[in-house]
Image (cartoon, rainbow, N blue to C red; front, side, top):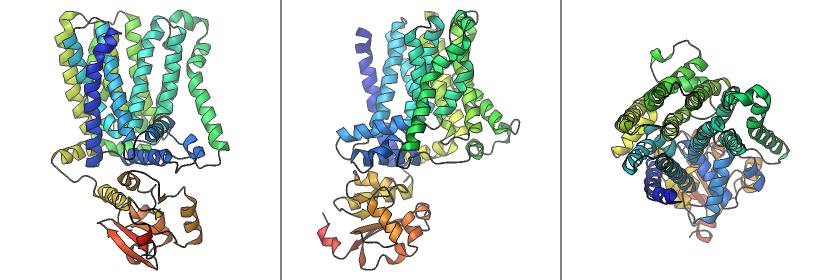
Length: 495
């Protein structure tokens, strides 16, 4: 109890810092489109604009349902995913600090080490990316921590924690199934050898059962549900996506096989961003109960990178780099470190911090460029800023026809979804079916913009942006968007 109270100040400090970072990232346009789409859908779900059947079959389920529940109980405009992300980072900071203090580490050492881990560039990148990435990191930590308990005692609580952590990872992010699948070949090695000798198959089935059952249940519900399943992460060619994320570095392509190259890159990431783990392995190489969980966790992270390519999953592969700070945190909390090694440990954590920044610049140069631009006062994503401005301009008006799934920032700029006629709405579907616009307001993006090229209203009405619907007049425009109002609606529906 006392240790938990002692961890409260650092957890609160980290929460404030993470929430500030998330808010800054949102304003600077650093949050990926996938994270913005999930947030906008949570706003729609919280405002009752999505049917419950759509919420049930949405994927990734855990961050979306969590954000929707937070949105329901908070005022309009509350950044629910940012609150979830900041809360998860704070919980992890509290757990890490508490683990170090429980291991007998001095308060000063525990504080510095925790801050170096929490503000690790790859963990910060995860926090910026949104709640889905952060949930994946959180469950990955729970699983890695459970590996030590499985190896030491193999009791029911440890088995339940490991199994539920894999289930959580699988439903937190589109790359989560790669982690769950990568863990399967190694599950037999996570428990004590005497148990494996009895029945290795039963051990694996017990640990994998929650994930397998959850996947089967989700597949069945999606099959029988009348609603269309919502996916928040855009489909992409994972092979070309991973290659593109590496940038123009021919030396990275060792064998010409994307899956093998991805695994080798992950090895480099772990070495550069978590050197403490490998030095700690050298310290305890004769103590197998301490060595095996570290080796298994690292092997799962490397295999997951390869599996993600083989399984052709959606999402950004830089998400998997969060395994590096997580691995360092697990090693620091579970491997005994003598007091005279504290300076060495802090130096290794600092080297991991710097190595993580360098590795992130190589793996995801676009994010580094965007962060640098934001720090220099750049405008961020101009089209997203225009969508946010349009959303603010529609506030107070009801019956606004807009393709909100194509431009989720419109929903965020408005602060709530009530009054918007979005694709799930029957009015939007009827408009597309009859090719006739009868809504009080219509918002449409420039068809020559990135957003406008995918807009369903532009596809159905090619001249809508230029001329507007008959009987409507232009009441707002910016560089990307135009908002038209029906002559009779401009007065009736205005705020």
